[in-house]
Image (cartoon, rainbow, N blue to C red; front, side, top):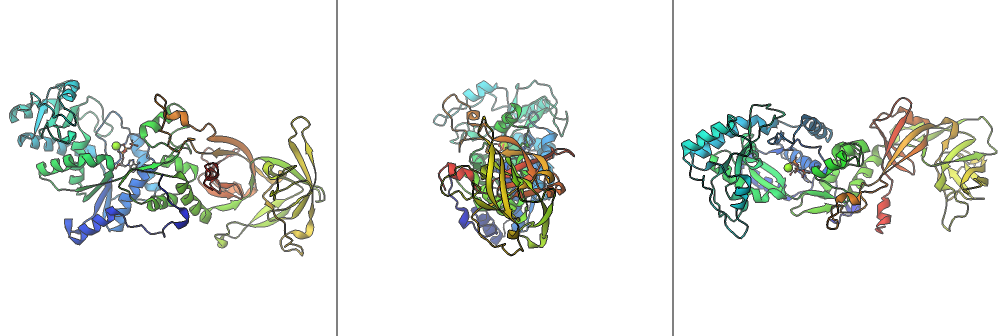
Length: 566
Ligand code: ATP
Ligand code: MG
């Protein structure tokens, strides 16, 4: 776990990282005439997650920092797994994070050019059509310690190769019958350089090119060339592509085209969640969550629905920096960045999530007072809201204990507390359910001159409770979300077990809450702080008659306590 102390977070400026150092040096040397052009290249085979957000912030942020450009390019070379639903969601997520692409491209836009590039390699005797089956090919590849064997088709003539490649494209052969391979070195120390496949036959409809093609380039043959065509100067990708870099450079060199520089950084992993699209898809398909945008998902759409702000995610991406070695970042750092942002922005309201009735016996029946409450102490210009107060209120069940331990400063029999924005009250008696013993009603008296602005308003009591008026509250459905997994690294499982054994059975609890009336003015996506309870947002499932609210995060890190970190 990378240790980052939120107390000592850097100032809000992009910290210098090794990629920026490389670029600074390149600019100094007038490489590419000082031009900086990056790209974010997602494969449209799933929704983006927080790891992608890191990559987006890095690519777009780097371009912005150096006055350069950044493209969005869909890496859509595999027609089978890709879908326009994903394309749309990716564009929405990138925009939501606050970025605008300079160019919008699809790798499939370049299929014609890539096909010509492949022919060029054939003509240079650097590529050949191979008829070996997949199994034969993998048997002949050798191992890390043993060189591979040359394919019997390796020395086909240029004419024969051009003819077969043309016929592959024309659809004359079934899937798997033939591939186009680079002719590099079957004894190369880097296995990826042992005559890698450039094209394979796939008889499938492509979301962008329809049925125009039945041969599709492999990732390695497409990616660098797409970068080159777009004039990308710095091709930033994650560490697993480090071993691909010799191949990336080989294609560029042999094709004699513009040479981008590939730079690798460490993938972001986050504690208490999984990040692979394949696993996220499994959670969706098997119904462990309610879709890609379930507020428990680490997807950008999930985080958005949960109530995260783009600013908090960008700040998180800045704070974690750019690492050269794989790391797991503590999710509480992400939550810290979120609280920091919401504290500034979220309007304050009171809501009772687990109510018990409290009756103020000496308060006039039928009277309603509208008390002034600050909307956001961090933003005084927002002014005040009016909170209705009356004889019958709700408070949180947890805020009353019949026989509390020592330092309990909330309400107890005979004890006094302040009701926030209102009066000091004293508990006189309470009623209990005869069977369960549960407290069903609390009776209090209040001191009329303890309200703000009144003679005795600064009388001190130790506890202050939030509350909601019984007959003047808005009832709402509140979804209390918690971490999706109980384990820091959910993928660490016993032999034969699945990462899903670590799912948190209590990641969602639904309760009925009573909110002060001001809640009605908020729309889906709006964020508020329920005082003492946490940050919440209005969910898109809300209707005219049923307000649905998500808990974004608690005010403090409850898990730190559980993990003994506090
Ligand atoms: P996954 O492994 O989750 O399926 P992927 O790498 O296949 O992700 P792509 O669509 O290919 O997803 O990723 C687009 C870009 O985002 C790539 O440049 C990739 O390196 C980067 N990226 C993906 N996951 C992470 C991560 N966890 N941290 C940082 N960058 C990431
Ligand atoms: Mg990928």
